[in-house]
Length: 235
Length: 380
Image (cartoon, rainbow over all chains, first blue to last red; front, side, top):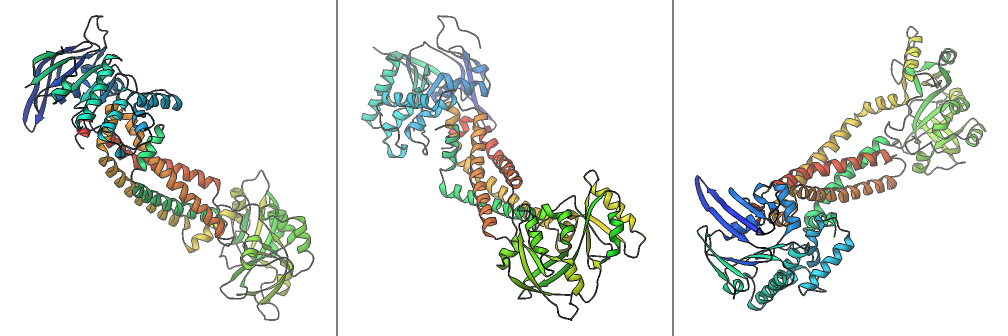
């Protein structure tokens, strides 16, 4: 791991390559992808299916690795990390919000939120206090004892957001966070993300198909055929 | 919810499946607990002494030795005390109600084997009160419902009295307890002088001499020297420790140890196959959730530990239930079965629970650990 210079971008991809092997055929996704995102930015990434949005998000989350090039987040060189180091990085530096929430059904909302804290040296009392605090932050105070199956989609997504921020990571990655929600719930979730970006300074990268969701971001990048085609900045 | 709490919640997500697995584990450990309790109990040889020596005829258990051997045994180097014993096997009431009577000299028996059998001075005084008095072991007394002061009749299988009758009347002078739960107390101690005086044949002979070696003397060496002493006599001897004797005696019917090991081994192998198969399927069903945990930062080692903790939880609960049932069975079985679930057995069982839990969990745990995050997340 090398320290970035003070004015270096928070996220930096340089000539990142990534492809998949389908049978005997090698299918390239990115041949030389460049991207920089400063700390505290809120970036939406849009693009058609198969454009590489999810692959990019997976690489930013450290659950997939580039075939070549450089991928730096903060002071971490993800492209050089092994599986164990990337697990540790994910536990401490990144939160992720999924389209279908991905809550564990046998755990209550509070227990789902507590999961990332099990990886930290915290006493049970401190874990509970932090869980209550973030549940309160996402508007679910007093709902911690409910199981996901008994909650609406919007509530489940708020639990997912609470789980993503409970360990206070600097980076929040969102994979279609409103893709499975009705209009009202989607607006609530987007308000929440805006709040996390503007008030708490989280750097957010959101993959979405929804232009309304993208309009909440400070920047929108359009990805197609492995290249960023255009960039729109919020007014 | 701590880390172990997460493992417990994972285990209970399918209560019926987990419950059935626990029942499998419980039954296997119930079998283990009962068979080990039998081996370790008074019907097995585990409670027998490794110091006391029995001198019997080398020609077989049915052959007697002359009482004339006594002075040579008493004067043999390394012998601290000598007692002798003649067996009277018979029945009380129904012929299937078999009773074993050991006729011995009370004072000598107390000197050689008194502490192990729990022969107190009070019991010895009561036994010496009359020639037809006997002491009854606690297990036998409870099984027959006998009490001190009661008169009983034992009908011998092959030892008629002088008048030709096979009925031997006795008066119960007291109940001896044995030194511990593993001590065999399922027999009667009678007076040799009474039995010897009244029996129709074999007078002044004994079935066995019982020796207590001096503390500094090895039982094995003393046994060899005793047998050498009578090697060229009319009735050569075979000298064994009480434990060797009992083990050889039990092997006449079957190799109990081998049978127990085979039964327990078969139960555990079957159990392992069932549990491994079920857990592999259970982990496969949860690959997506394991992918989510990995995405949240759970390392491969933590996933391995999580699945192992889950299987250990199943084995701990199931094994605990099985051992508790085994303990209950040993208490309910009554003294006649002489089952003893000793701390040593419990210790071995706990070690087995940990070992089998770890072995069962290893294959599914490694499978969960190795599954790539991306692949896992696509299994929804």
